[in-house]
Length: 434
Ligand SMILES: Cc1cc2nc3c(=O)[nH]c(=O)nc-3n(C[C@H](O)[C@H](O)[C@H](O)COP(=O)(O)OP(=O)(O)OC[C@H]3O[C@@H](n4cnc5c(N)ncnc54)[C@H](O)[C@@H]3O)c2cc1C
Image (spheres, rainbow, N blue to C red):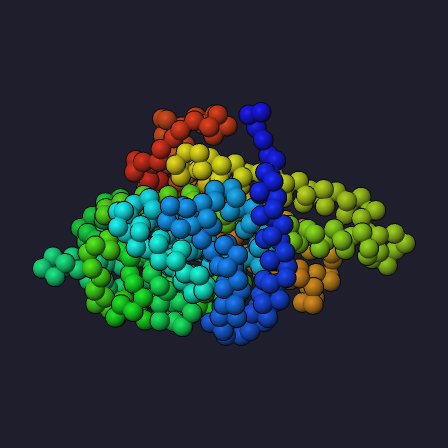
């Protein structure tokens, strides 16, 4: 049995538990939060849900058992995330970003750093601990691997060797979770910094673990049109001193970014599938009961039936591509950067149009805010834009892998190993006329 798409008994149970949690616990809080005008109040409205998610084991399920996590595979995590995102894709982003902050510590950190930071996350039984993944910048993030030191990441960390510290100055724009519940910082923020002012993005980037309470940082919340149940902030650093033992991936921040976005790609993609699924479930039910003033439910009209058939096919195809990308990463030590990029661009872009097709089935009533379609539409706009934006970062790294001699069209279908290297970076950062 070389190909098996069946969920195990454990995965079926996980799906049922996550679905019940999503409908009973998450939905009412997310609906209240989405209606709140203040974005920080909207985020905090979900705090009791986060506490219950922690108690249920969702918050740290993807972290290894040896550090106190749930030991779930990425495929397992997708099963749970799809259920949560079908109700609200903002809240699961909080869980995803905890992972984006902590998984690099597992991959690039020392044993002491793993025990300290992953251990702190898994020791939290109350549902307080937040970790931020801090990479995006106001001037743009899409060209983080640009060869010029004046381009790409500009949050600078200068090494003060005498005091054994890095001194950080600059700004980050968009990191999720980073402000924490009280806007005094997440428990830890993993910040991608420039540790060499003279080199390009393939050599000059590293990451610093910045602990809550570190002086010199200010946070202000971004007021988004969707995903209002997660927090995004602008983070300003003025002379922020961080102990040098908090540095990871020195000179390999570029590889850290790429590996992180390979881990998150199927998760963000299943979120897109889930939102489309939510819209499809509503549209299908509508089509079976609404007559449009005629004598039969509108599903009996071929135009509606054909469109719903296309919608269902795209959702099924999207879901299985997510499972494949997650499975490849699970079985290849977090590799599969090109497949992750394909997964994210395919699902993020496609599902946004699937939600619109569902609105076309429902008709004008899809615009009525008392129904969920208008919200699904807003939420679906996020997927092509966030998690390493589809037009540049996700497609560039797929392109870089495909251009390499080691890549063949059979690489992923045959499950062959293919390790991402720095030589696959930098594609498309300097345009031909640039
Ligand atoms: C809900 C949510 C959660 C988020 N969470 C986080 C988080 O936890 N941490 C974090 O750091 N950020 C986070 N972000 C920010 C976001 O993920 C990134 O900033 C975003 O993906 C950057 O993508 P971009 O392509 O728009 O980049 P930009 O650099 O702003 O690019 C802008 C545009 O220029 C185009 N472009 C630029 N250069 C090229 C090129 N070489 N080739 C082709 N096109 C190019 C891009 O394709 C894009 O269309 C979050 C955002 C949202 C909405």
